[in-house]
Image (cartoon, rainbow, N blue to C red; front, top):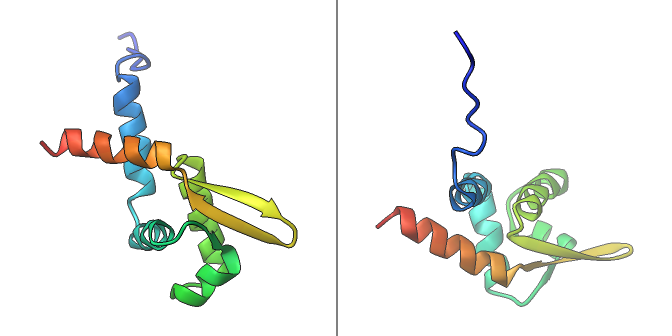
Length: 101
């Protein structure tokens, strides 16, 4: 029996929605986004002070959000400043809203 490839089956919109949803799939990531949304930007060290997680765990969650394109980081050694990627954040809200209609 031949194997049917599913590549090309999903639309770009569906794939992007799934990427955003995966990034939003942990409560600490929601808290990170809410924190960043309440400020223009925030340094990694400052987030450690405000969130109840270890620095290394925070870094892993920031990486997931950055890979999904929801946040962006500016490296100014020895610190990293994170901000919401407003263009992708608006797109994420639109895409998630579309599936919740």
